[in-house]
Length: 311
Length: 248
Image 1 (cartoon, helix red, strand yellow):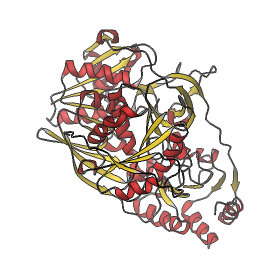
Image 2 (cartoon, each protein chain N blue to C red):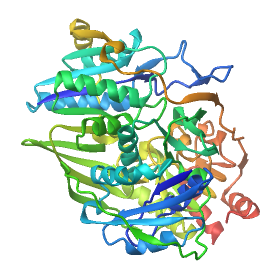
Image 3 (spheres, chains in turn yellow, brown):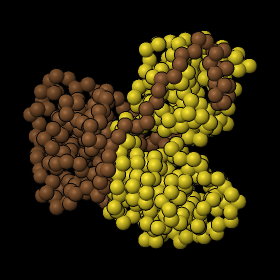
Image 4 (cartoon, one colour):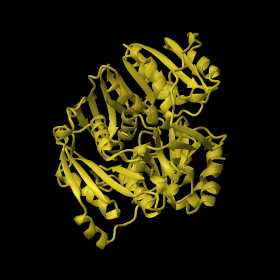
């Protein structure tokens, strides 16, 4: 069994999502190689080489991979796929975009959002917004799956010095071209890897209030900031903040839901958090059914009081 | 420009899925089914492109048994022109759907395939990308904005960290994210009109695609339940409890 893990990275460092997906890849029981495809990604490849239990790091460095477009990446992975029994990626926006393209060309079914590798051909993953867990047997000759990274611990770097090999870059014409990217710049931790998340709902009432109330508390706690779909749809928070079935799936040590009622699709994104706190003035709000600690209060009064108590 | 919109009939977003007692799957008897919300957004976008004079025809296609026609009728009520139902029994996997759709693309020759990024039942998020791969077309998944610029499409995508904008040459495939548009409520006259629009029914077998699922379902079970905790009286108590459990 040889597994290829396609890394998420920013050319400099290897993403937390990759170190978690590596844990899932290693659970298959065979050798794991990591593919780092990017432009000027030597540092990310070297960081990957320090991770525990990696047989080899493959570095594909070319302009074509600068913006993680699916078409050239799929061509690259397909060029090296014949050596592998499994192809794995984090269920990030990049992984979700890319992996089905590879599975289809290999003529194998993909399993999405794996939360447990129960054996080399048996996988668990959530369906119906996490309302059910489906266990599937995958007899395909190549196992292709994305990993729900919130369900796996990170594989640590143990100072290994795994070899980094350059891979030949296949020529692929692409009829998709990159125009631009607008990325949120933030000093705060990422939602996917934060230990604490402060998340806001529609009750915040405006983008100004959202920022005014949530950000100071998040800063005090060193927390990432999340939002419900309702808050994002209303324009209070950017799309990248959305926690839920179709947004980010998170499982921090502490999740603080402020003014979030707790729709099924939101719960799907955060109910595996270790400790959940809910502040809502509606004591019937469904969020209280999953919260370890519930405070029935107006968040505009409660948040300053929490900050004072944190002192 | 001709647009093909694959749509899926899925559990209604307000319905609570119930597990079958024998753990073989979700019990969909007597559960409200609707057009998958992401597919509905795709239909709305396609109809808007036609209304803006940028598309000439919007064809919807669905794979399933007779009931899948409901998803097609919903799309026709929004304003799609005609429908194709590919009849297939049982569990049909995304790869199989993509293969069937590739055959429909061969027949219909659309310039754009616009579909939902995922269905809210199996949450696979695969079919669009698989279809693009089989057709060797460029793709833009998770679209929040779609604009036609001559013979090219400029698509803004929702990605981790923000937005990415791509330019695709046609033919191309786009999957929709939530904020692409807000689908209209079809008016009663349009619902009535939709009943008269043509829907062609074909059997999946005629396409020569093997429908046998590749994956087998071992079981479908409840996720680990989370118990409701306690209510605290005030912020002070909340903070001391959080310190006591060691998360602060």
